[in-house]
Length: 306
Ligand SMILES: [Fe+2]
Image: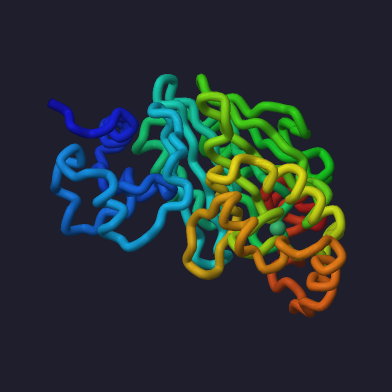
């Protein structure tokens, strides 16, 4: 008898990877946190409450269940601290990538091929200033893949998306929310299941215990504050939130956590604006290279001065 939950049966079959690898991608599920010494046990023999106890970690989003036939991978770039997300519908094997990084296109390509997925869209949450998107290169590798970004970003893309649109892959879809403030074109993507949000990809609008800068591109602290409170922190408290970056080794947060512990966004709007004004951050080191490249979908040959 197959003792794994249904959502785990898909990933090993598609990828040839062990279930523990698949588990590592599901950051809001308590069973992800089982230490290596327990990985050979059948999960049905270990009470879920004990799995949480094992780690000493309170999983603040444990009640949320993603669809059993959704493949979800969180990938990381050690240079720019960017998270790239691979999502796929296991029934149709249609997939999307959120915020791919140019230097890691080989990694993403191999993973997509190993999992036998069809990459439908490469989506950017916004026009990044800290890395060059892998979108253009992925389109060369996967000719049926289309690039997506907000029109307000000003960047080139095959498909422009805005508030209220849906990013459809197989039988799954992400709802698009406009969350400007870090840049004009910032988007948040939300996946619903059983009538509620179960995954939200917040880009740079909301980071874990922080937020994106507002001192370049079209940054506006007041707009960012409104976006985060009216579009993201109004979701159910246990909604898992996945940012575009993390600089401290964290992978995921929740609405409840950020409403309680975000040092900037728990303040009043006026206090938030003051905090952002006083950050005195250095000039972004990759912006002069990244922004022009991202305006042409990361295709360096398409740069005007080439
Ligand atoms: Fe950004």
